[in-house]
Image 1: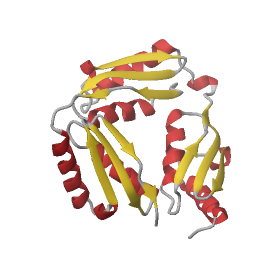
Image 2: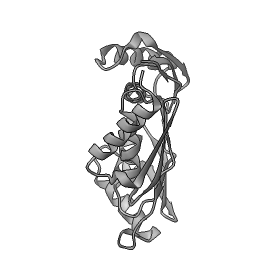
Image 3: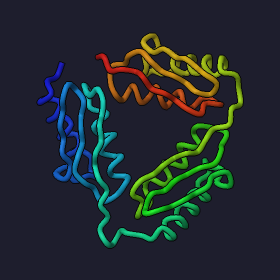
Image 4: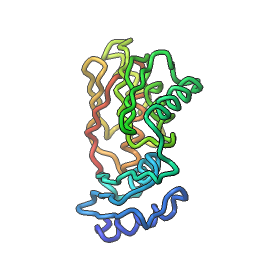
Length: 217
């Protein structure tokens, strides 16, 4: 088991290893395996990259992220410009049914709404917007249409977990309530926890995943 000091240094080294980040701009604090990131970056996607970099370090139990996005003058865009960019990038993305997604922008915060058939479509819309210049935050309120019975959803997720070489399906419990999936149990790493969540989202009809899995190496 790593000490908090050792884990802090590993996270710092992982941030330094990430070529898109300036690690010196990000503060790292660790208490009982929970990593808190602070500081500021010049784009929303770098905020996400920092969080994901910390999460993949072995021994991290959770990531609390308090990084601020501060755009330099050259990267600032009006809400109208951001809205137009978002609409265009969604229209050009083959994974997103752009005619089913609505876009609202206020003070650099992008809100996506509407209803789609699959979880991957919701996530594809989110990923497309992350990288756009001028975005300070993203609020994804897109909903998923229920298409199959809850028990069928559970069976499909169980099968997916059993096929996944990165997951020990015996340690994960699955409950369903309508199109909501509740995951519990334990996994060895934060990255494995995210893999389980993504696998659950891939099932048809899932509109929400509540991830209560804990990290227990």
